[in-house]
Amino acid sequence: MKQVGYLGPAGSFTEAAAATLVPDDKRVPFTTIPDTMDAVAEEKVEYAVVPMENAIEGSVNITLDYFIHHQRMNMAAEIEAPIEQHLLTSAENSADWAKVKKIYSHPQAVAQCHQFIREWLPEAEIAYTNSTASAARYIMENPNEPAAAIANEIAAEAYGLKVAEQKINDYDHNRTRFVLLTKGAVDFGHPAITKDTLYKTSMMISLSSDFAGALHQVLAAFAWRKINLVRIESRPTKTGLGNYFFIVDAAMKQDDVLIPSVVEELRALGCGVHVLGSFPCFTWEELNGARAVPQVKQR
Image 1 (spheres, one colour):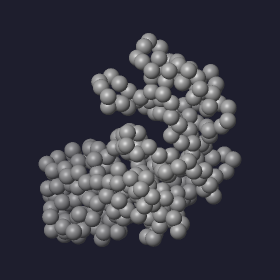
Image 2 (cartoon, rainbow, N blue to C red):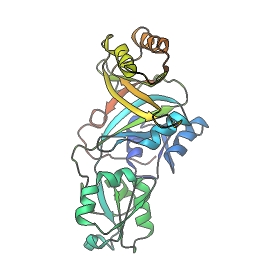
Image 3 (cartoon, rainbow, N blue to C red):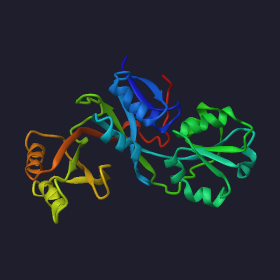
Image 4 (spheres, rainbow, N blue to C red):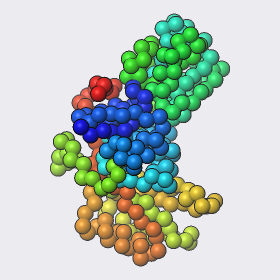
């Protein structure tokens, strides 16, 4: 049985994504996103599932930056899942949750629930944790502390907590992209793949120099070939102010003609180009039916 690493502990959204993408593999929790990615590089696990982008808060910067600057590997698959955040308390605090003094959760989850916190718990101190599940576990271990966690129903069930308030995220269409990472290039043969499955090819592009029209030339290499870009994002190179590279996702599977010719043209312009992966993209609904809330059977 293969092993897949995920941002733990048990009960996280990331575990639910891993359970959906590779349901027959053993899931191994790690404390941080970098630890999860390192485990693949060190061959402790075959895969890692990490959050890459949220519809409300944008890219998960720790994932993208660590992936680009420290632990480059292959993007092998993607799943987009709905995210519902709840306010979880111990049984001791569930009846009077408005009096909690401290809220524990991951920074992204806290940001997704900003308006709820501002309206209902404006005086509460925020304590950031490595994951929503680790916040829920903390509440379980400290039931008498006047505190709450922001996490999901999986975590509530896993750690015996009460859902004091449901769906406290500020926006209804809260979704997160999770990416399956592998050490080498892998053709991910998921049984749900059909002729209609959407593929993306993700590329990192750095400009040779900052001159008028440089980005336009990069985008033109895709445009005249009629390649649709579904995402373009700039990230600092960390070599100085004003120095950026671009992550672009092309809505197609890597082929033998179009993508190689784009790479060749961009390199002829003096750009640095790295193909980060070409992978199938799924939605939670495609792989799990209509269930809105992830269900995880422990393995």
